[in-house]
Length: 253
Image (cartoon, helix red, strand yellow):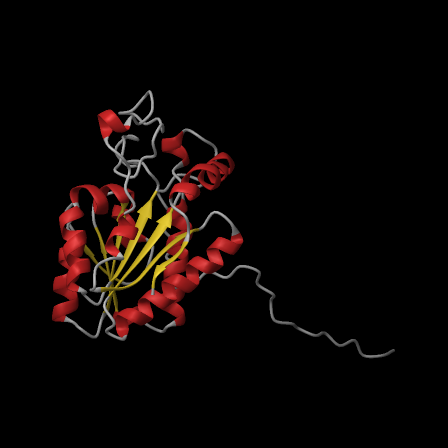
């Protein structure tokens, strides 16, 4: 009788979690873009071998607990003040890879001053800006990025520019500042978009460590809870309504 040989093959992992992501259960709503963006940032830091050299700054907002999910050093900032905190950290530790992770309410409302000036100074940090056109954590109120006609808790009949003003594209604005070396707007609503977003994250981090100035990465994101939609509906709504006003692609650099 012939001897039977057993071949043990390496497991073919379709999805493998980077060791930088913890096993903590995320508090984000199902379908939220934050989880995907967290994963991409963690993957890039891991691939660059920069876990011990990276410091993230998270302020108030849906991402206030980001430190629970990515295993790097973190600093918590007051609402809107992440850019100021990140500036201090980078100047004290210029060899560290420093980034902020901010929502549209935090960065483009209460934190507008800090955001504009950190860009103008050209600090060698990365700013990740999550734009879902609504205040997700506090009940779905209108944000500076809320689209015209979009219904929120504070604009139940839709945003009226005569009453509430116009939404603005802060990524386009900061691209005019000399201290900013790279500005891009991405999304994560499709696999192809995820791949492009990851490349943008890598480029931003590399710019930071090369001392080229500030890199600003905006993510056009979903908030299916605030939008009162299923995750599938939210992705479709983003593509049909958000992307025409916030088109994805590189803006500078």
